[in-house]
Length: 217
Length: 217
DNA sequence: ATTCGAAAATGAATGATGTTCAATATCAAT
DNA sequence: ATTGATATTGAACATCATTCATTTTCGAAT
Image (cartoon, rainbow over all chains, first blue to last red; front, top):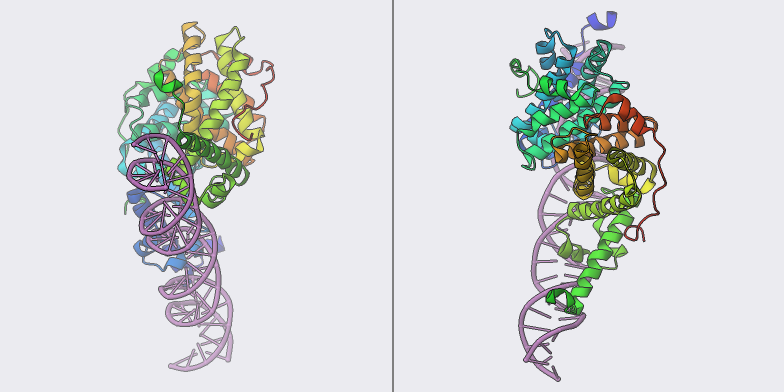
């Protein structure tokens, strides 16, 4: 308590600014050129920081990439929640989330660049959207809509499957329409019946709120 | 026809030997140190070939890694088929395959090293085991056991999910036992009922034939 | 005001490695 | 034996991620 009211020193403020600037710069550069092609030099420049400074805040390039992706995932999770808050059917909450993530990953040009490192992307998705997704899975199970024994495991599988399908769509190996069927399969995974899964996947979706305060800037 | 009976020139033979040697060497080195840590220099040496020669056969290090993984997947697919050939229930054929792949990826130390590049692994799995898995999915659907509209898409999702779970198990994020539940979820994905999925996942499995002629020697 | 020093920032240097390419070797055909 | 197309070679190159000796910053002590 005392800790939070005590005014932070200038150094501490500078530190926070730099970390923030680096995540924003990392997102900007990586989403434009892809994670691999983005150089630490360019990211540092975009953050108005020396090349070595990045390593005061992140252990490695991968570590920075994880931070960038987690930021992105967390933001999307919050935006999804803003919409699903009013949904009556807990199964539909989960369905909306899954559908929205796939759409973002295949539609948004910036996301496409970040997909390549699929295990990093899937991991960030698992971690940052997990608290929401797992809660939704459990809610729907309690309500008798799903039959999921291990929600975290189910969400882990879903994360990887979503990223995999998105990757395939962006590479032209799957048509854009595959998204619908993907949602059906992911819903089937929860033990809901086939027919209901199809129904859920095809319901109309309300629009998502605009991009949050974090990325883009 | 004439083409295949005509004796191949010495150059052609040398070429085939080198390609083969490179895949074997790639497997040996990459499965020991991991794909990233394996250097082209070391692989070339293990294949008794100059460093530049690798690039006569493979466009890049990644290209070689893909060839190595595809070899591995193809071999496993054949070994699985040797067992499932006698199965009566087409659903059980698919279940056995899925279960066996997860087990290999999490048990075999050499596989673990190859998992890290998950999108490469998943892609190889999709491509090389696909013809078998897709056929099994379709057979089971025709037999009324599964209800899969798009078998290739379903297998793509499964590939990524399997690799993701295996990765998590090898990193200690999931217990070994998660495999069983993974199989259940993957079976649910096919539209089979929850109860039947559990049953299928827990049936006893016959042993797999020993490792094929291709990898490891 | 001035001094002091710990923490933060810097950016040139380092090291490791994937890839290229000019030179060389191979070998079937003549 | 000659030749030329093809394959091989490995030293040189270029690219970065990362390190670290030096410098800068800034709150606190005097």
